[in-house]
Length: 76
Image: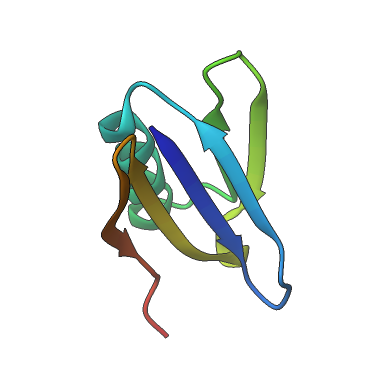
């Protein structure tokens, strides 16, 4: 599954491939619920990406069939 992560105040979008979208969603929610300064995500090829929590603009989960329309953005 392709996951797109938007970075606030830029036009940058990070794309990762993951077989476990629920794990990615859980990590992001845990970062916002706690005081973790970084959200660490891991691509299906093992690449780890650290994104500052306050810089997350949106997260979009896209299935193999195309866009699912599911995603979220942090509240203001």
